[in-house]
Length: 171
Image 1 (cartoon, helix red, strand yellow):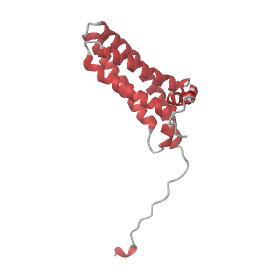
Image 2 (tube, rainbow, N blue to C red):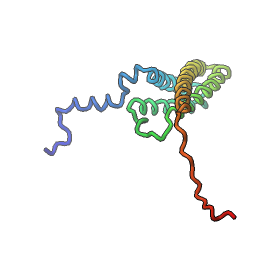
Image 3 (cartoon, rainbow, N blue to C red):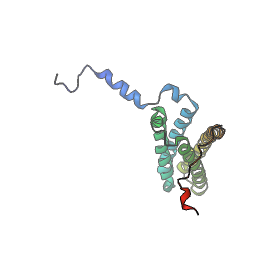
Image 4 (cartoon, rainbow, N blue to C red):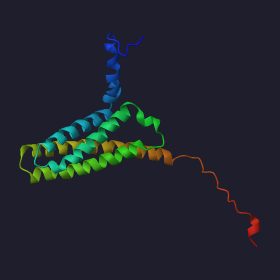
């Protein structure tokens, strides 16, 4: 009755751990695979930049890792469906566009300016991350474009606005 933790309840911890991981359906979807690749590549390039002479570039992979892991969590737990007023695809699109541009720039700088092996490895992983982020924003752009085409073809007319001016004000 007063036991806080039952020693026989060791199996109850497994669903909590599994609830943090993405579901198999989401992890095997195109969006899930891209987000998992973004998380992995951002983390690897974060480690490579942290160990290299180009440690000044460590902020970009860290921020992209945190952003990708947040969206992976949000999409896998359907957290994004609870907030209907927030445009999740547009946020994801802007994140992917900026990540691919910035990863491309810092990868060029890491490969060309620094001579150590970890800077070269960070640059190579940065180039691969650039491709993955570019693929992601390409797919998001196609989804947004088709969504906007569907939204623009509605046949309903907007309701006419009535003016609240009275005719007595005019001569």
